[in-house]
Length: 71
Image (cartoon, rainbow, N blue to C red; front, side, top):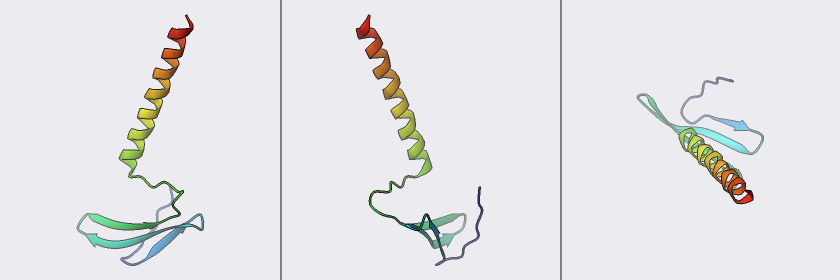
């Protein structure tokens, strides 16, 4: 993991097309602004994990149904 220090108003760039800017720091919360192309999905990690779990469950259910129909 790369750890960087940024102050309010400072940014970092990822892969030449994603910019993350520190917008506000209030107590233990930081507000970030993300500028990315429309085709680059941006998720909060907890939402991303939930999507991945639901996709895995759907694949498992589809595989089970396929096997059930095969027999």
